[in-house]
Length: 133
Image (cartoon, rainbow, N blue to C red; front, side, top):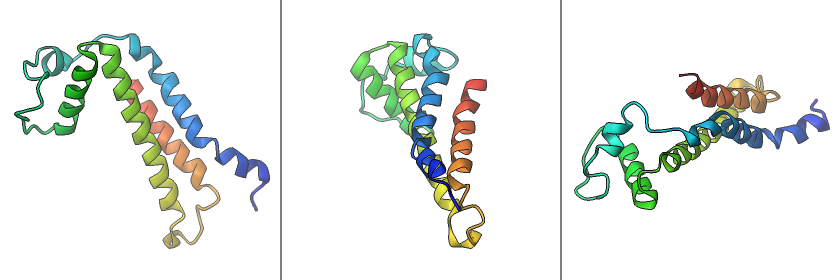
């Protein structure tokens, strides 16, 4: 039997996931371009045009870089903010998928009481794993 406090607490899990991601990645907004950013962003002569679109293995990534450049030029904070938003969206999507998976009939209700907590833990681990490297 679930307590009223547990039911109320579950409503705040997505907010907790968002807060954790923002807290973990906040210092990246003042960072600079690193690693392959110099080749893919600052050294890319085609970053300012959408056509012709190159068919790379990172099509969505390239598209977001082009949109970032169109909106804000070459400011690293803009690129990092979009990256943070994408990671938050992915973390919330993972939370929803795991939560809904754990309440499927094939589990016979085994994880139903803990589905929110387990899904929240998975999303938080996912988001924090990018901070570690």
